[in-house]
Length: 386
Image 1 (cartoon, rainbow, N blue to C red):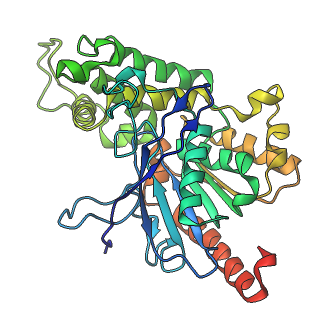
Image 2 (image 1 turned 90 degrees about the vertical axis):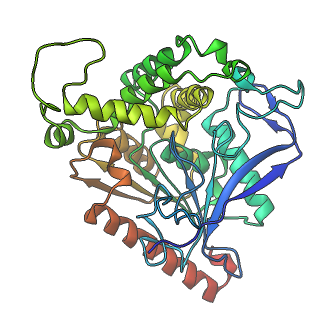
Image 3 (image 1 turned 180 degrees about the horizontal axis):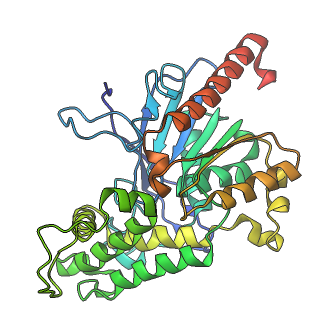
């Protein structure tokens, strides 16, 4: 049974310097939710970082909306692997998103107009800086853990480099130290679909009262293909026809079940996601590369981390393959860091990190049990143990 979640918002008057050299004007706000209770010494906080099309609504449901479960509700809550009877869990919506935090759909205080395409470029590192400011306001000096999957896992890794002493554990799931050329290519195809939509209007479509839905639909269809494994697609859809083969193909016909499924996903996505947000977030994915400043040497990039790590990958995830997680693990081990690694033989592709799998959930439960016992022992022994 899910609990009731309560969305919150926090406003920041101090401008936020961004990696691009731009500055996000003061008065920006971050949407967030919290679950559980912060303990007396504020040592049980867990920050959850979200992926591309998710938000701060990580767990629970909204009152009066029974089908409003958070995107990681199977993972986080009372008695779940990340147990909110033990941990104070924080979900934050990234800047540039379309789910409450300041983004392209909001007003630029410098012009009085909606930002649109003029919203500044944001990076994973900028999101982490913004999250750190929110934690400052909540009075949390050090996190028990930072947890994230996919793009959220990149944020968790970046936390260990930007604020190494502000976290004790990093849990990075179905992620990578950077995107390979194939992933960047998929993102670019999706972006081209959006910017070439006649309703895009250079990113200022709000002023025209339209939405580039055609581009968003295609972008989502391309992305969704990469989230599923070949096995899942064949098992779920195969070559099933909706009615029967009639060989009357036209550009509008939907004959195969997989076509129907992808169009449904695209249509649904185009009704709730912002086109400029999609462009911003996929660019942030492309730019993330902590080893870039070290000549591509990931070992050197990870040398400054002090957290303990859990890294999880899934065998059929070809978007962020296990080989990419092993790169992270090797770089950490080469630095003598404490690392646990689980490679789950799951059929679901990249989406596996969001789904039910007993081995996966048990691995997470065991790891967070360990964090809880560590935190409890430290409370007994004194704060210097942390």
